[in-house]
Image (cartoon, rainbow, N blue to C red; front, side, top):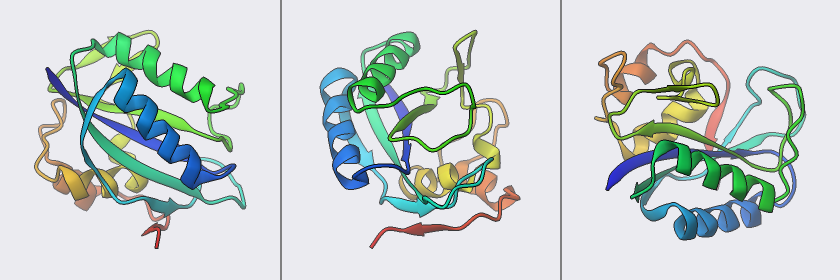
Amino acid sequence: MTKLYLLLGGNLGDKKKIFSEARINLHNLVGEITAQSAVYETEPWGFESTDLFWNQVLEIVTKLSPEEVLLKTQQTELELGRIRKSNQYDSRIIDIDILFFGEEIVELPDLIVPHPRIQERRFALIPLNEIAPNLRHPVFQKTITQLLAECNDQLRVEKVK
């Protein structure tokens, strides 16, 4: 069994319903959700949009491989209406990123774990710090709390009330 961390994100549609369905699907397809952060409202990162994002981190225990988790997260995105566009940063119904997969370092054409830009994104670090502050990044050898303290991202990240 491996402990992994996923980041849910989205800024279109009924975000409350979509996040709820994503959690149910991930529980059924990937494994037991053992912790979850609050949901945070965040400004778009890397592009302009008037639609604010919701973000949430899930801790899941799984028997699957990283590649199998990627397939299940992409399946969940499709089932919830995600349409992938050529532009990497764009508005979307749901996006599910694998942040960490145990202490593994994975470098495949379609999957890099730990997430290669996590240290640049408060919208990922803040909810992750809420549930796993002492989690150590296997490449940088720093805790999530340390990465958050060093992050230069100034975009707004606030808990959804």
